[in-house]
Length: 246
Image (cartoon, rainbow, N blue to C red):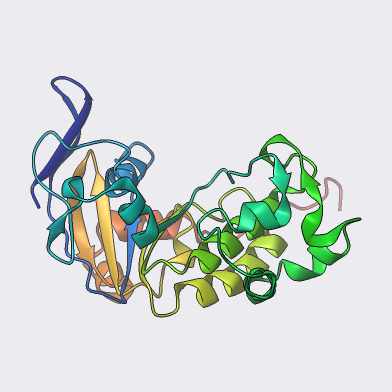
């Protein structure tokens, strides 16, 4: 409600943001680079405090709850997978330390991570280097998705979760995301607009303000910023130039 935020005084990054996300719905935040999408996600996670306005979950201001309680309510999957030194099982249990091995494996299977985990020398007890450098980017991101699923938080925040992987890996991750998002209130930040077409609500940010909102079909029909961004990411490949002399 009325959220305004600036990293530096007098230079607002977000201005008068008003949003309602019903329980169980998916809301996608889209817009050009620098529009304020990731900053809004950071405010939802209480990494920063807005200078004006409030953010509430079920009517309660998130500034008045403990960090532990907020962490139990919101699972966050960033663009850059965060893993720490320790075993794979330790990393998956990060948001739910008491999870059993069976629950850990069930979460990994659900997002498609189990097969590559069991091929490692020590399976779920395999040690990870700092930030998981001994795994591919796609594998690290699948572990983050499994960790979010295991945490079983009612709210899910995805910040460009598939932006840095190749198309084949992204296709597998989209299947995992559908399982993860089922029944949860989900806020998705995405540049690849094809990944958010099914969202219940699309919110378009530009210059720190909400400039459009609606579902995919409504925003395409309006022919505004969303429609332009969508066309830019769905340009058909140019026809190949003829070989000289042919």
